[in-house]
Length: 419
Image 1: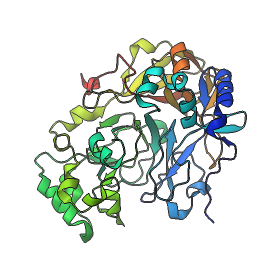
Image 2: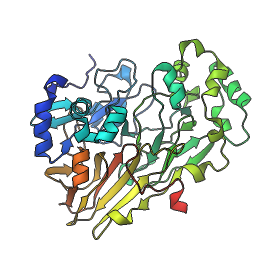
Image 3: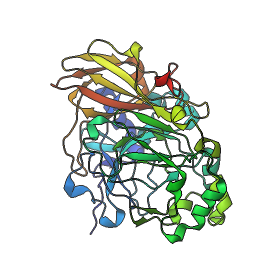
Image 4: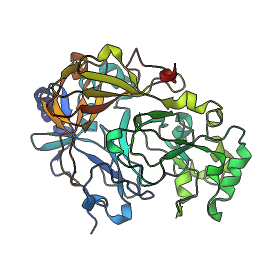
């Protein structure tokens, strides 16, 4: 029989309050999280996210291999046959587990700040590692107005390629993004008409960019993209909508249902409607790389002797600051205090040390269902007060942390690295 991740001591929302208070007090506002693994039935795992080799198909082969790990997530994975908690992060304290989603509902102002909680009534973003052996089908994530048609939210996202998780390229370290300038809607429509003929030719209309470790991309909703095979850190809006526009990938069929799953049922054969969900101007942008490519930028105000804080995801989407991310590196024997204007989800990608009262350490290998010391949620209260990060190991301590909307007053602009 297929196995599923147990939640042996997950506390229901009615009893989260007291346990949450003790966890917040014990961690000075920093919550320990357990790994959240997500499979995708239409992809092949890249096997670089430290999951034990025996556990790649822990949800059962029928569900597909585990190729994603989600961080500080209160967003459910939109997978068929999903377990009830799929995509949701658990907090762990004194041997018990409870959902981060329930914690935010219980004490939103303390965890994510009063302004953010009142506006969204949830933690509206999440991040993940996605790690595949080959490319993902050319697809897009709906814009907010289009996702609303099926009761969902749009999904802008971003990429960063951590060197620590990319010792090998795997099969195709290039990502197709957007459409070749001059492409017409009629050409894309013809690709949809040819869906059942094998390869429908979508990639003939796009261009691929070579992926570079230690850099990233900003991907607004409505833009076609076929992510390549580097392991990717992906801060994004808290939604799991998508539409696959490519019918065949590495000889594997992509079902029509994955094109229209987040579209109104009466529009599932309306090719003009489907093409109309693309943000056409952004797809055929003649300066696509200039507007969307990200090089790390050192935050001089928050770096010092023995530590460096870098912007790795920055810029706005349609004028809105929806999410952002930083990479903190602390040298052996050094320490610093990170003081941020908002809550963040943190994952350690190299080294070991302490964050406030909690030990943090990057594991070499993780069993499915095991608890680790590499992931935490830095609450709004802790971020504003400042959290001490200390490197107690012999190599650099490196952590990635992502933020929600409208947090930073000094966020670099799109294309900031080149300017």
